[in-house]
Image 1 (tube, rainbow, N blue to C red):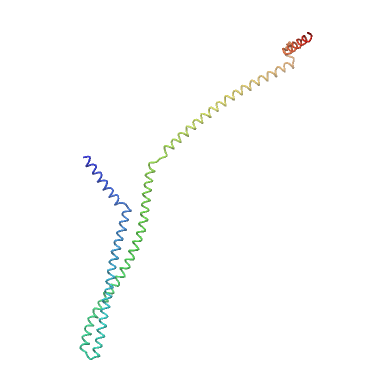
Image 2 (image 1 turned 30 degrees about the horizontal axis):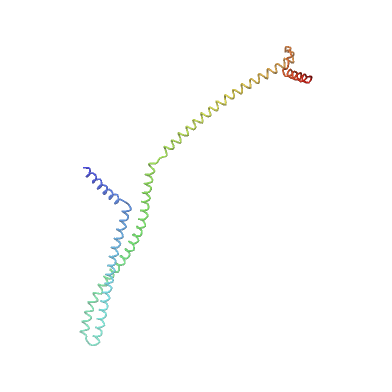
Length: 250
């Protein structure tokens, strides 16, 4: 069953390829152009036959005219020679040729008209064939362009930048979030520094006020009397001088 299934798929593929090829506009246009060329060749062959028939009629008519003229000349010669009966027979024969000549003239006129019509038809068909050939090139170019556009559309239909755009959006939101947190931390840090500066300014202001208060008390005599304390530095200097004197005395 599997073998027959594979064979059927192969045959089906061939059939589909044949149908697809038959429906290909380029193939259709090529076949149409070849058909027009074959019809043009047939028309040219028919034209050749019509013109050849006309030429034959011209030749036959000219032969008939020549025979008629010859019979008339012979009848005149016989009449001059006194051969009246011979002249009469020659004129009877000439009359037959004359009848044929009139019929041939009518046929030749029709042949001439048919030949001109055929030649004009050939020119018209050749113009149409050239026009259709140019149109075929334009249509095939448009068909190929349409196929390329279709392939591009199919290729682009499977391509999307939405995923990358979402990643960019997510990254941008993450950066904004981190930036907001950093700004918040800086704002908090700035707030703590301001509090420290305010506290330091308060301490300096209190110390300055205390100094001003002590100076105001001293100016008003409100401070208690202070006992003068010995300056350790002065005492050290005195001790050093005393030791130097003792060394000199020794």
